[in-house]
Length: 254
Length: 328
Ligand SMILES: Cc1cc2nc3c(=O)[nH]c(=O)nc-3n(C[C@H](O)[C@H](O)[C@H](O)COP(=O)(O)OP(=O)(O)OC[C@H]3O[C@@H](n4cnc5c(N)ncnc54)[C@H](O)[C@@H]3O)c2cc1C
Ligand SMILES: Nc1ncnc2c1ncn2[C@@H]1O[C@H](COP(=O)(O)O)[C@@H](O)[C@H]1O
Image (cartoon, rainbow over the protein chains, first blue to last red):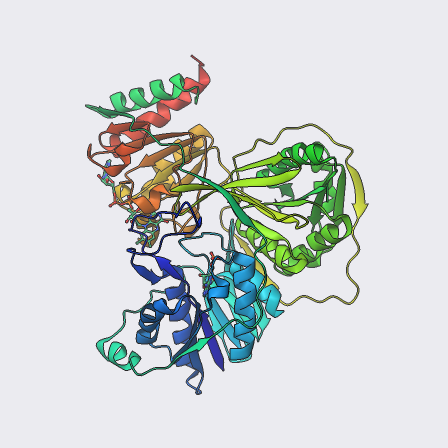
């Protein structure tokens, strides 16, 4: 079985983010690029399925990102993926979710897959739109928010988180699953993994047909600043409660 | 391209509040564009739900009382929303920026070739063109997005930023037909409700969140839940608390949890790390309780009370209950 894990390269969350006012895009220079944290859970889930099946199944890492992201993709290889493919094409710069999902769907069709594993959302966009759109473009079942996943090589069963609990669902392969971070604890790359990753292949792909972005950024503003408010040190619980209730009254919140 | 379609999410035979919040906004936009408002409801309860929706400004309520919509995940909902979109060629389709809303909205956008904008907190029409404002990059930028001419838009709206106001529209009911021979891929074997009746964090107008300072799972269901209950709100959490297994991930606020905009956010034993802040910085009022006067949350909370949470929270619950009984 061929498992493909999609990984997005995102700016480190602890770094300061800035948008270039001219291009209206994120300034990526000087900011560390990392694997989208959610995608590490998808990769871990893929590795566990591969190792449990132990039938020659493979895990391929896929990322649509500039070639400069190669070393970050190598981290995913160091975690234990078998090989990687990157879709790098200047024609794809500035793609919105729909354009991204469309370009990914073409590339994934050429790579081939039985199961695609993804993160629920990326930390830079937080749109969580690519998994659903990709399932749509590929015409395969799209199981989102999986916190448990089993795969027997021909079908999957999963627990999907819902707002009020969870659903146990099943679907047959080929399928796409996005996972939440409750699903596992991603491993750290071992030294052997890091060394081995240097020899693994990262295949470079160019876009086979692109879709226009269907949204455009027309403006950008800094959010209204939140000023530092009052700080009150209290002697006991009753005083603390009183300070808060008075404040809520002032703001007509109780 | 003048109409506006609202996707109605429901739970336990009740529309989710965010869907009703969308109805009012839909009406406002449709009026500006000179079009009508539509709602789409799928599931066995959809007839009864339509009656509830009739109290809100919707012109046509499309119902699919198809039991498949409750037995199969996502796809039936996408089918019905898409069929209404294809037939009425709306300018805009509104979904809640919720787990289901995101799934259904993004798939519908891909299927009909619409643009998709997530986590929107304001929608305006200027010169006949719809523009949406959404926080991006962890709330460090407010981005205004629009759709190219002739391209419809699917907009996932953050719950709690618009208000649901009763104001009946034409409320005409239209029956949706099940697509012939359609079968669905993701079968729901079991639907487990763990937080029956409880308000989701993104929907509550008051959220009381707990962090590592709570020290264990128990205070979440006792002192914190009591305070949330007294304020008519929901319980939220920091990632530290979720990772420790003290409370389910659905309650997590922040970059890898939910971004919310309640009127009042009370952070209890939460330091205010940047990844937490991005999930709640658009709250109306932020109050923090922390024993450390130097906690980062003091930099952006409207009020930081420095003291022991275990002493303050139960007293606060009591005083809030009293204040509500005897309005000042
Ligand atoms: C990629 C990434 C994504 C992340 N996503 C999220 C996210 O979505 N949401 C999120 O919240 N975090 C997220 N984090 C984690 C974030 O960086 C912080 O680690 C986390 O928010 C800390 O949680 P906390 O405030 O509960 O714990 P701490 O930082 O440990 O703070 C606990 C606070 O409680 C106070 N306290 C302790 N005891 C008492 C007492 N008795 N009375 C009063 N106060 C007390 C302490 O003074 C302290 O300020 C993410 C981190 C990364 C790297
Ligand atoms: N450019 C990309 N390359 C590879 N995977 C991506 C890309 N963009 C999004 N994804 C995947 O889609 C998931 C959701 O991302 P998003 O919809 O951007 O929030 C991520 O966790 C990734 O698994």
